[in-house]
Image 1 (cartoon, one colour):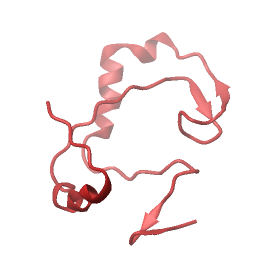
Image 2 (cartoon, rainbow, N blue to C red):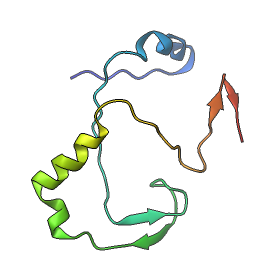
Image 3 (cartoon, rainbow, N blue to C red):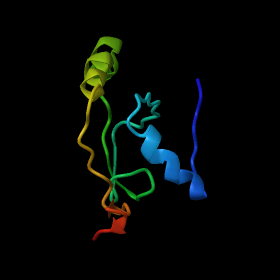
Image 4 (cartoon, rainbow, N blue to C red):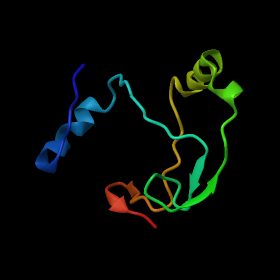
Length: 88
């Protein structure tokens, strides 16, 4: 596996690689809600995750929903840019 990290002026080439297939590896924490919608925020709610929801077949079934194009909702405190300009 390889990993590409772009920074500084190197980010200018991202437009050439953005359309290629990608693989994501995620580390998740279940049952926790934060005030900002990401891991940085203060925890505002915690729920116990039912064991039946952690069964391998159930997890695989849920993960299949993430295959293909996705519409993402950025965290509420994210710096969103449209046409390289920050939006509110």
